[in-house]
Image (tube, rainbow, N blue to C red; front, side, top):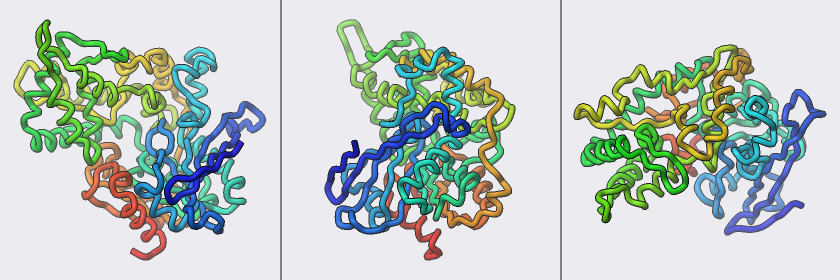
Length: 433
């Protein structure tokens, strides 16, 4: 049953769609896709073009706005907006440690999850678009991984698009996951250097915490095993505009004196688990390298293998000397499936995805070279999550795509300055900038 309700300045409607699990087998199993329609309260009855939002990830549902927050306020001036929970996320048919055993064993689970990449997400969009728009093309706004999906959209179904807006999400078109992570570790190192330049007191704090973990390796209240590499992975915060500050405040109150001696505080442990746990978005860990899979070469735990080429991230060597401990970010590694109770039951499934050698190609370079859809992308200079050189190379490969390259924001520019970012991208596609 469709539900319509109001928040300040906006009318929201729950929409649910049935789509094939495998679009090449339309008579086979079906899954549910949820989306939230949003329209300005003052224009609810107007004929408006549609904008569909594809959020970052993989593995995250669409942003849950409160009223007309951030970029949604700007979008509602021109569009009726569809906030899509990509398959497996949010209120769509879920895929997690609780539901995946219904598919069978790890092999069946991996086969199921292989249909949760950008190619299937775009086909979901095309399956529901006629019902939503009456067949008219719509504008896609893709943030981060949503930009990967938007790029595939331009490759696979440009007839469904009136415009493509991409923010922090132009993928490499032909690079392997190894290329992605080989380029990522130097960026992580630069983010660490910037953090320690801002907060030099954190050098000793991070080393002290890591030394404590190396000796004690605590299990947090929620069951997360906090190893030194797990602690280092808090560096995922450093790619966000406020991430360095969040990391600093996390480190400053790590220890507390107890009757048994110095220990990690409950507050520190709780806050760390909130950052590191994948309980709310397990597909991020399961599919994070699979989103780069194309052709016969497996991803094979690329981030973990590439890390071996950057010894400065080796915590054991760091603690034996006097160098700052380097945090990692934007890298899913196999040990996470041992540490995180939300991932532990899916370890074999993750291994099978990492070994897979039959990934379909995601991007048609000839079609992108002949693109006629108005398209624009914001590229964040030295983005920790998406390599700038890869993004610029892809931008040059898409005919007519206009770029806004800026160092004013980190990867979350759409979140922190949404109206301005969206306004610039719209202006670029409309020839107004």
